[in-house]
Image (cartoon, rainbow, N blue to C red; front, side, top):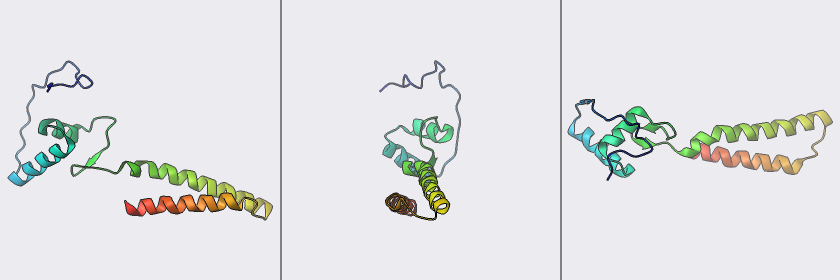
Length: 118
């Protein structure tokens, strides 16, 4: 196995050491998490400490749900749709797009259930 991946190799070699004291249980926990990620212990710890760009942030060695990052944008878009429908209904005094309103409310319910499941 290559020591450095081509996409991460900047030509600089890792020569500066860092010593961290862990309990045996902490060391085992890090080793287990590294194996689950399919990475070596050193690479895994570097990823945790440096949080390379383009990768999901980690919390306690567990990757966050990628859906969680998209949910605020999805909820914002649904809210905009709902606001536009309410604006038309208030301006005209009637609900001309009842089908769109039902669809938007259904989307909101599905998205909120995903939020609750997180």
